[in-house]
Amino acid sequence: MMKRYYSMALGAVACASVLRAAEDGAQLYKQNCSACHGVQGEGAASGTFPPLAESAWVQGDAARAIQVLLHGLEGPIEVAGRKYNLAMPPQGAMLTDAQIAATLSYVRTQFGNAEEPVSVEEVVAAREWSKGRKDTWKAKELLEHYPLPKEVSPIESLVMEVFHGDWKVLPEFEQLESVAFEEEQDGYFSLRHIKKKDGFGIVWTGMLEVPESGNYRFELDADDGARLVVNAVEVAHVKGTGPMGKRRQVGEVALEKGKQAIRLEYFEATRDAGLSVRWSGPGIKGKQWLSERAHKGGRAPAAVIDLSPKGKEAVLYNNFIAGTTPRAIGVGYPEEVNIAFSTQHCAPEIMWRGPFINGGRHWTGRGQGFEAPMSSYSVSLAAKKAPYRYVREGEVDWSGTSEVQFVGYVLDTLRYPTFRYRVDGNEVREKVEPSVSGMKRKLEVVSPGGGKLGIVLGNGSAVQNGRVLEIDGKVVVQSPTEIVRGAEGYHTEIELKKGVNTFTLTYSWK
Ligand code: HEC
Image 1 (tube, rainbow, N blue to C red):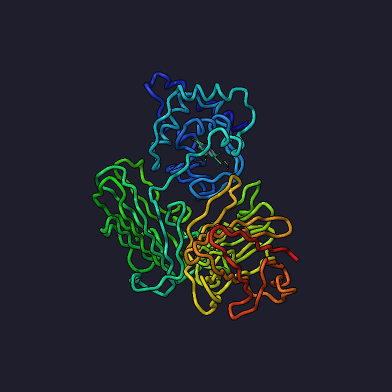
Image 2 (cartoon, rainbow, N blue to C red):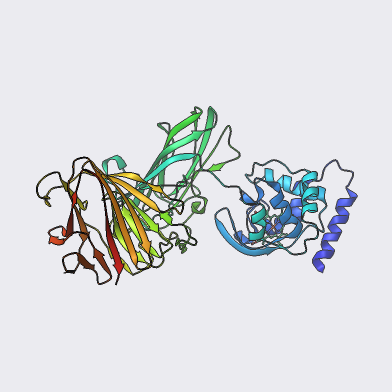
């Protein structure tokens, strides 16, 4: 009640100044918004309330923010990389259309936001669209009508290489051997994937899409050190160790329109880790993030994000998976069978049952450093080396090696992959057919010369009747040909004829 009375008084003040050419957005903001969102849009009460600075909620289509003002907003939301679950009271009854337009025009052009101002007509139309609405907007419901603009990183083909070591200054990464290598699929510099707390370094390389020729400004901050190189020019260097804030560096460089090489070196010695990279210049609205915002300082808390398939489609996960080679493709099938297909060895190397993978927690490193399957009911099918041996004539030589090359994969309409690879000139297409009882590996081998293909099946414990292998007491493998024990583990050899050969390996849960 008190509140309503107060806002009516405000309305009266605004009426008195109705002859002014335009409403004063700055003044309105200060009166009606700053108590909760902060004078600089930073989010009041030390960030308890969400910021309007660089908020995707005020960017793009203005109708979203207009609706927030008209009817309020409640429920879980994410703003600038942080989560909130609060309620904002409606302002629509106490603010006129012109006042809402002025307030939002101010918000959209201040605090680092660089959006178009809002016209009174837009507010009139928005009020009409939602007239009769009595309830506060639930965030989810509003976003169905007005989804947040999707940020697209200007960096393409971004890959990161991870190093371990104790440094006080940036090391010569070129002289070191990396422990892991990963593609940053969303194109942002991010520490999200690093589980190791201290003593690591990262080198990212990618291609930066420069929208126009001109001078660009880069801001770099890091805990501990970092160096940014664009187009072979060192643009900024945060030297030594220490927290973020005071050590921030800014550099300018002239760039030509088009794709320019970008390289960022970073290391973390001890305590907190953090990284922030932004750029601005011709063709860019305000300052654009090149690093993940959640890492402006410190690290986002690890959340459990269960990536298990929710519908009929399989889910693919291209990242580190414990128990296989660094480059593996995880596939979660709706049948609750999951595999990790090593693209180095060209074989499913882990098979597990139940939930797929937790995509929220994620780490890198050697051995202990990869994401594990979410279920403990998992079985290793891995061979030490590439599991294939091929001979054109004679006996398969298990001490030798064969050349195994991953070619790629194709997805069917339900996103079930067919993997394609080559074993010494034989073209293989492999599709996993999952079922509640396990899976079938269906292999099609196009062989130019015929011969014998040996396949390691893993380290089993018991071979019954020659063609059945039990692994870990959890899974039984059936092969069309005899299974033999050798130094490589248990293997089988398939006779290939010239042309197309098909065969199936069946894996059933015990
Ligand atoms: C009483 C406190 C309060 C006032 C006053 C207030 N807000 Fe909010 N606002 C909130 C809260 C709390 C949320 C988050 C609601 C949630 O968690 O779903 C929010 C969310 C928002 C959002 C979407 C999220 C974001 O941070 O971008 C916008 C836009 C917004 N407010 C704009 C405004 C503007 C403009 C005004 C002034 C006309 C205003 N608010 C006044 C508390 C307030």
